[in-house]
Image (cartoon, rainbow, N blue to C red; front, side, top):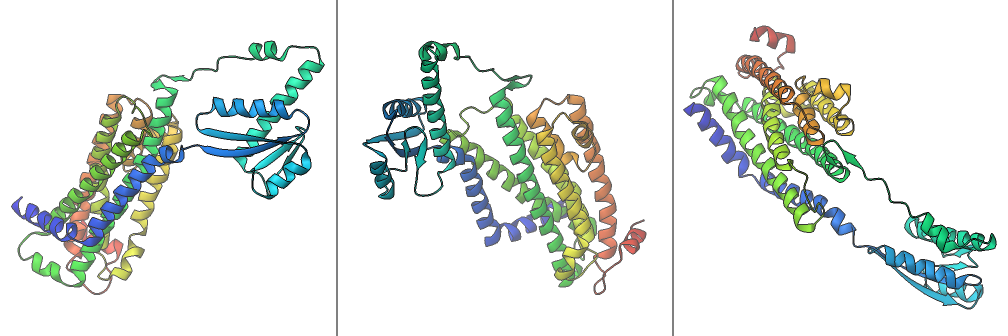
Length: 390
C-alpha cells in the first residue's frame, strides 16, 4: 500500500503542478460559474421606444403602457406623432425603434426583432378586439373580467413544477461535467502510460514497485485530482447560482444529488481509467494512442448520450434498464436520481453492479498492463494482449 500511495503522490505532484491543470481548473470553474449566473445576467430586461400615430393612437398608447406595467423586466416609452409622415421620419432618425400607424401598419428600419414583434402583436390584438366588442355592443371591461382565468398550477409527485425544471437542469449539468472530467482524466492516464513506456521510464519505476502498484497508484493519484476538480466545479456552480439568484431556492435533496454524483464519478473513473490504461499500454507512441482508444472513447460517448436521454425521459424503460447496467449506470443513475425519486434497492443494485464491473476491468486491465507495458516498439495486438492476460 505504501508503494501505491507513493506513486499516487508522485502523480498528484507532477500533474497538479502543471500550468495546464491549474489554469484549466480555474477557467472551467469560472465558465461554470458564468453559466450558472447566465439567467440572472440575461434577465436585466429590455427597453423599447415605440411611436404611435393615426386612429386609435390613444388606445395603443394605453395598451403599451399596460404592457410596461405588467412586466417588471420590460421598459416601453411611447411617443405620439401627428401623422404617418411624422412617424416615418422618427423611425428614419432612430428616434423610435418602430411606429404603429392606425393600428394597422408597423413602420421600422429593418425587420422587427422577435421580442418587439410579440409586444406589438399583443397590443394590436388587444386594441382590435376592444374595438370589435364595442362595435358589437359589448362592454370590453366586463368581457375582460370574464376572461380572467387562473392558470393551471403544475405539481409533480416529486416537488413543484419549478423544482422539476431545476432538477432537469441540474441533471443535464451533471452529465456534461461527468463526461468532461472522465474523458479528460482517463486521457491523462493513457498519455502517462504511453509517455512512461515510450521513454522507458517505466522500466526504472518497475524496479521499485510492482506493475499493479504502478497502475493503481497512477489511477488513484489522477483520480484525486479529478475529484478535486469535480468538487471545485460543483461548488463554483452552486455558489454562483445562489449568489446571483439564478436559482433562488434549490430543490430539496440537491446536495445529496451532488454527493451521489461524486460517488458515481469514482465508480465510473475506476472502470474507465483501468480500461484506458490497459489499452494505452499496447502502444509506445503518443500518435498511436487516439486510434487504440477509439473503442473506449466511443463507449464513454455512448454513456454520455444516454445520460441526456435519461434527463429528458427519467421514467422511460431505456433509462430504467441502463441506470442499472454498467458502465452506462455511471452516467444514467446520477441523472435519473436528480430528476426523479429512485428506489433504494435500484440504487444499491446499480452501485453493486458497477463496482463489480470496475473490479473485473481492473483485474483484466491490470494483467494486460503488466504484460504489455514492458514491450516497446511495435504495437501489441489486442488479441495477443488478451491472450497474455489470461
